[in-house]
Image (cartoon, rainbow, N blue to C red; front, top):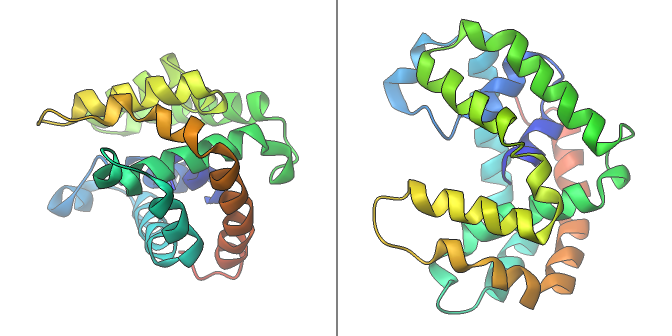
Length: 193
């Protein structure tokens, strides 16, 4: 799952949410500088990823991705699943999508002064460019993939992979709606920190 799902599955506590988002940005020993709440978010992010990566429905979604994008299948499915979460948001959250994202952004803005500058900068970009809101449209997914592509050090095709969302839309959407309630139940059961 990508950031939208991680945030929805996180506790409403700002530190838990921040930890869930920045887990992909902060690795190894650098994590030790963060509070216990953010550490809990790191652990939650990892548990969500482990559950997702091992799930047979997710494997089926990844198998739908075709060449030349197969090598990016895991990343693509994570991003595509966030698209379906945004599109069908009210199936999974009672708070309207735009209001929920604004509330999360406000929560981040009230807390980022407690974070190291590189993390602050990432969260500020997320808010300024409405990264969560961009998941709601195929065009936004194309922008997300282009942004991700630029962060990679080697030349890659990730920025052109939005075509896979269009090519397999119905099947991927069906997979997501089969998988996500299971992930929510897993998270509610307390298996995720």
